[in-house]
Image (cartoon, rainbow, N blue to C red; front, side, top):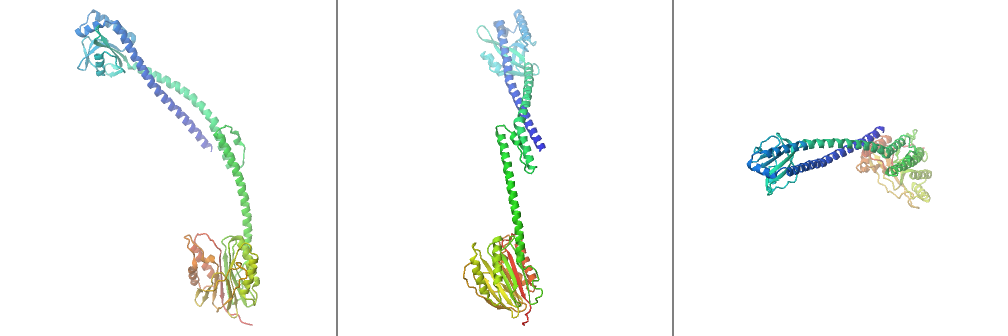
Length: 528
C-alpha cells in the first residue's frame, strides 16, 4: 500500500510540474510574440522619427536636383557628412537616398555604404511597396524586413523626399539591423523565462505542500484506516475522526467509517446466522441418524430366513426426507412390506413420516385386513393433520407358506412384479392418499407369487428424476433397467437401478427423495 501512495504522490508532483512547465512555455511564447511586435514597432517608429529629423535638416530641393543631374557638388559633400554622422550617432545600419527604377533597381542619390551618386543596385525585396511610396508619397503600413547576403538582416523605414512643389523626388531609407532587435528579444525571453521559472518553482513548492496537507494526508489516513481494517479482523478505530477538512474528503471519511460500522454489524450478524445454521445442521445430522435408525438398514434383514430376501434404500433430497419404507414379520409366516411418500420435504415431512410409519406398523396385525389398516390409519392421520399434509402408501403382506400376497394402495406408484423371466408393471387401483379425507374406505387386493418371483416398489423420486435437459427418467427407463438386471438378487437390482438413475441425471440437483424396495420370494415355508 505504501508503494501505491508513493505512486500517487509522484503522479501529483509530476502533474504539477508539467502544468507549471506548460504555463511557463505558453507565457514565454505569448510574451515573446507580444514583445517582438512591440520592439519591431518601436524600432520602426524610431527609424521614421530619425528620417523625419533628416528631412528637416537637409535641403530637399537640392536632393531633387541631384536626382535629375546625378552630379555632386559642395553641398552634397556637406549633406553626406551630416548623414554619416547621424548614422553613426543613431546606430542605424544604413542611411541612403535613392530613386526606384522600372527595371527592379534603384539609383542612389546618396549611400552611406560607399555607393557613388548615380550608381544602380537591385531592390532586394518589397519592390512594389517601395514603388508605392515613391508614387504616392505616403508612408506604408507594416514593416519592411529584408534579408540579403550583401547587407544582412534589416528592417527599413522608407519616407518620401519632396521638393518645394510637394513632388516626390526620391526616397529616404533608414535601415536598422534586425540582429539588434533579435538580441533584445532573446534578452527579454531569457529574463522572462528566468523570472517565470523562479515564480513557478515557488508556486510548485507551495502548491505541493498545500496539496499534501489538504488532499494527500487525508487520503493517506483513509487508505491506512481501510488497510488496517481489512487486516485486523474488522477492528474499528477512531483514526478517521482526524479528518476535519469540511469538504468532500471529510464526507468520504465519514462514509468509510459508516461502511466499516455496517460491515462489523453485518459480520456479527453473519456469525450469529452461521452459528445458528451450524446448530441446525448438527440437529439435522442427528435427525438424519434418527430417521435412518427408524428405517430397517441392516442387511441381510432376516439372515435366518431362507424363504425370502428383501432389500431397500432411501436417498433423501435434503438432510431428512419424507419417503419411508418398512418391512417386518407380522407373525412367523407373514412378511409385511411398506413403501410410502409424504408430501413435502425436510423436517415437516420427516415428522409426518414417523407418525405414518408408526401407525401403519402398529395397526398391521395378524388376521386384520390391510384395507381396514389403511382406513384406521387414515382417520388417525386426518385427526392430527393441521398442516394439510398427506401420504401416498403401498403395503403388502406375503404369506410365506402359500405365496399369497395381499396388498393395499393409497395413491402410490404401481409395483413391478418379476415372473418367469421379466419384470412387468402390475396394474392396481391407486386408491386415495392417506390423510387426505376422513372415512375413506380402502380395499385389499390379492395376487399369488411363486418361488423365484420378485416385487419391486419405489417412490416417484425414481421416475421423476430429472437431468440437466429437464428430461425425466420415466417408467420406460426403469422397466429397462429392471429387466437388464432381473436375475440379480434384490440388493444388486436396487444398486443397478440407482446407478442407472445417477448416470441419467448427471450433475443435475436431486429434487425428490429416491426410495426403492425389492422383495424376492425364494422358497415356500413348510406348514406346521
